[in-house]
Length: 172
Image 1 (cartoon, rainbow, N blue to C red):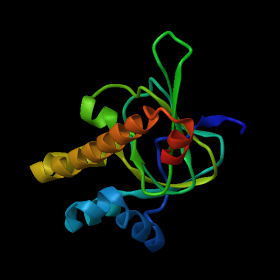
Image 2: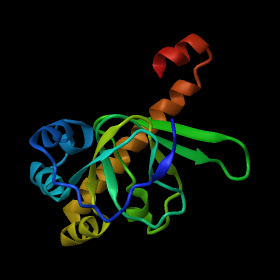
Image 3: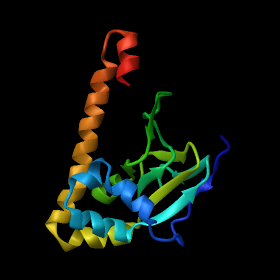
Image 4: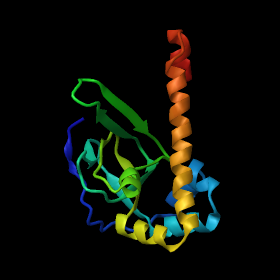
């Protein structure tokens, strides 16, 4: 996979297609929150096609957009401190990512790369911050995403502790 530069934050992409809205609203996070908040978030989102190998964002970048995978696969890479250990996680349809800097007010800690050609939903950072400032329930909706993904990570970690290699493979 040939690497391409980061996608630009000056989005000129159209709003989500009806098919993209239907895909995202039926998956995990958006399906579990208030339908009005889901509608408002999807109204704010823009759709962007990203070619295989494109860097969606780099570690150290200033906080910005939050992304949802409409189709394709995005890979998150994280190098642990000064060691050679790397953490890799693949995002598929329905997964939202990139919200950490919105919550922590810090630069991005990871790099995300399109593993395949992807369609992404993009929530612009400034618009999302305004939306979150409007009402506490908007923050609760974002917190539910963090909680949901934290639970998934915990279960994945438990799967990795299985003694049998075959059991680990089946579980993941």
